[in-house]
Length: 298
Ligand SMILES: C[S@@+](CC[C@H](N)C(=O)[O-])C[C@H]1O[C@@H](n2cnc3c(N)ncnc32)[C@H](O)[C@@H]1O
Image (cartoon, rainbow, N blue to C red; front, side):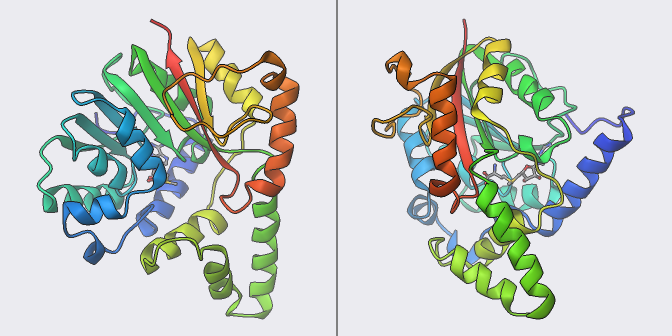
């Protein structure tokens, strides 16, 4: 399961290299080890997203977090009796993840170094496959997606978090403004960190890596809802849910793995486009990040 050394096109190798260098310097999401000393700390600092997943995934399930970064999510999910794996290409991130797991004495979580585009993970092995914020930092997001589907059991779930083409527009504008201001004002970056990330918990290391991830990343792509739903269709997945919702009107879903059933007029390509246009304004704080959940057909 180690990264393969087989020949890859130069662009692919180059993207992997610059992205990896970035994450070796900015392990994500990063954390201050002093704030994660006990299992209780991990629970207290879990995101709403982690808590929602935790409430829905049954005991005994096999779970993988692909591109797990510094490993808080897999460690959190391993607090319950599940078989959890976290994989990533960044050695520094994995070192932090392993340190966290061993500090919390978690025996049911394992971390491995792999490249999502070139791996030999076992097919149809996992009930729940998460890939949050990773594919858009690779040279071939669609190939990465196909690899996720391959390791999912029939009837299992695939969760992908990506930057949206519309939702990310404002962030891209802000990024340019901050870069421009930084030419004249050395403190512009510090102010942007404070201003944009006030809602982040009081962890300086997390704030720094969030800023780098959003404003200084060397490689990212953006993806529309229509594009990802096409990936689902072409690879035998049924759409289950999304965060934020891709349907017109109605409340945000409260459950991740419960299929959304809404009237066709609320969920079709035109409805999805209209919703994404609203994301230009409503999703810019999160950089246009969204999550789509699919279920592999049995
Ligand atoms: C933005 S971070 C997301 C971390 C975590 N999933 C989260 O949501 O907090 C992206 C992660 O993807 C990893 N990554 C990027 N390209 C990868 C690849 N080709 N194979 C495996 N991991 C990769 C990076 O090392 C990094 O840890």
